[in-house]
Each structure stands twice: as C-alpha cells, then as structure tokens.
Image 1 (cartoon, rainbow, N blue to C red):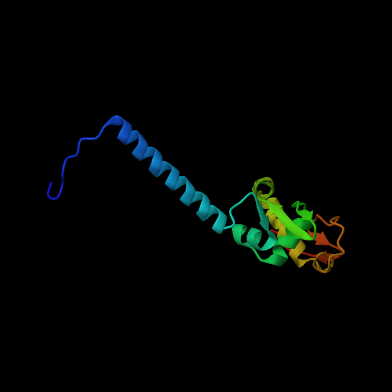
Image 2: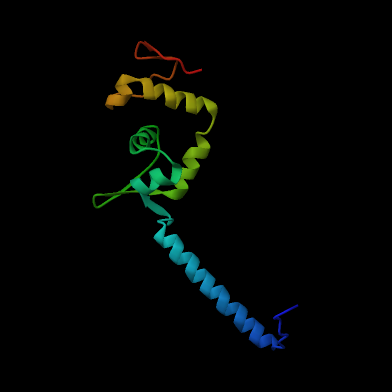
Length: 129
C-alpha cells in the first residue's frame, strides 16, 4: 500500500488506545443525547417531536390514557410510557377510534366522557371504517 508505514506496538498500548477511544466515543454519544433531549423524560414539545404529532393530538392522547408527570408546574412525559402507550394502542381499531374521536364535537371541546365508542358518537354518525 502506498503511504502505509507498518508500526509495531505492544498489547498494552493497543489496550490503552482502545480504552481512550471508547471513552471519547461514549462521552460524545452522551453529549449528543443530552443536546437532542433524548433523556428518559421529555417536555410535551419534545414528546410531540419524538412521535411526530401536533400538540393538540398529544392532548387527545392524554385523554385516551397517556400518562404525564407534573412537577412544580412543569409537565414531563416518560419516553418509555410513550412507547408502551403506542405499542398498546397501535391496533387498527384504536386508530379508527382515535379518528372517530377527532370528529366528535364534544371530544374536541373537552367534555366527552369517552362513552361513545361505537360508530355513532353523541348522536352523530361517524364513518370510522
């Protein structure tokens, strides 16, 4: 190979070299994770970005049972709770129900008691299929 110089190094040097780069990589990864907001707990804005939905849709998911944490006026969402909630509710029926609730005027105004789980919501016929 052109420009290649063979170099003999001890096993101790190789080990120290590997350990140094491992630690540097780990620090860089942790810094990137912190800067991206990829911690265990997220703000509602970070949660919306994480799952790709609007703030209004996140509020609807809360009404459907997504848990949030309120600490001293700050609202946080646990990343693991989001993933579990999505996996639990990813059936097509749940998607249809979510879409039906989006069309329910009482749901939109925040006074729906979630008792309308059929294709007729509060007397309104809703196409969910």
